[in-house]
Length: 421
Ligand SMILES: [Zn+2]
Image 1 (cartoon, rainbow, N blue to C red):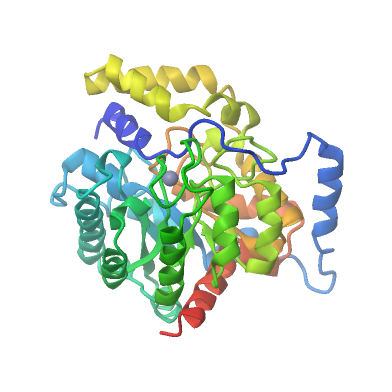
Image 2 (image 1 turned 120 degrees about the vertical axis):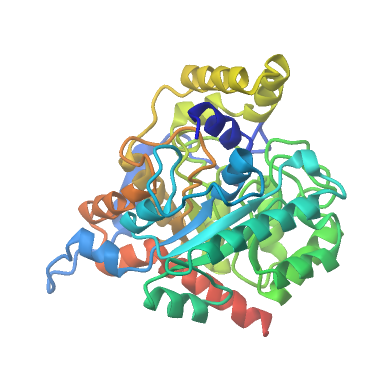
């Protein structure tokens, strides 16, 4: 598969654009922030020796909140899975079965992404096609993958040595304003829905687009109530700060950010501000930290704020896909001076822990949906190195297990209980 193609496909899935009202972000008082981070970490347990990070990683449930491989596959081969050799190692992209295994991934949320150009009656069709593609991919590799619909199924599948595969729909336009379609998506196996992608809908505002509803409309609140009733997680990655608050005002279940980083460290409108992080304590929800360099590094975040408008402009100027991909590569390389490192990812985890608490953080890589990743986190096989970094920073075994996956498991279990199904 061509590199150029890959980049072109990946670009379409990114989140963001111009500024919505930033919430309470830090004023660069890094000393104070550092102090809080240090205090937030429990002292190492002196009675038991620290667990070997590699063994800890292998033993822990490792959950990734967001992988965009399904849209990448569609870009490469349409809806045909015949050319897909997922069980062999690929030179391109971030994800295949051998690398998922090396990365120790136990639970993968696959994104059924619907680009905003399909907003309208076509969006549900595209969502269904992506869900179908994910389900066919899972069925093709029964030794390694199995669809999981509940936490009980996740535990059983992981216990059997397979990767529990879950489905999240990215873009609330997938329901085309219909609660009935929302229920259908649940029946097809969808267990979270990201309320928006890059465009504001008539019921919920997207980060970087013009707000219409002060966060959430009355219908938007109906959608949240229905998701709570179904036990479908409400994913508030990609929405405005106002919409994050509006959802937290009404949801009866914990929310997730399936792939978002901390605004205080990287001031991008798509990242989570501190005044929202604080509210996760009462809500019980989690931020699954995004690995995209443009959402992790301060420079990157500043310089790719208007990513979507720029992408549209560059696409219009470069009708040829290869030329477009090359132009976008140049655009990124001129704007993101540093990819960051695994330590940068850990910095965002530290920050979420310091403001929201150890129970409110997870991992949401955005692998195969982003064009640039930190040094040392080039693909999914590198995940154990993040565990090593967390252990080196003083996190104890129980904390590491929470970050890697137990927090998400708790959120999912709580959502199931709230639904009463
Ligand atoms: Zn996204």
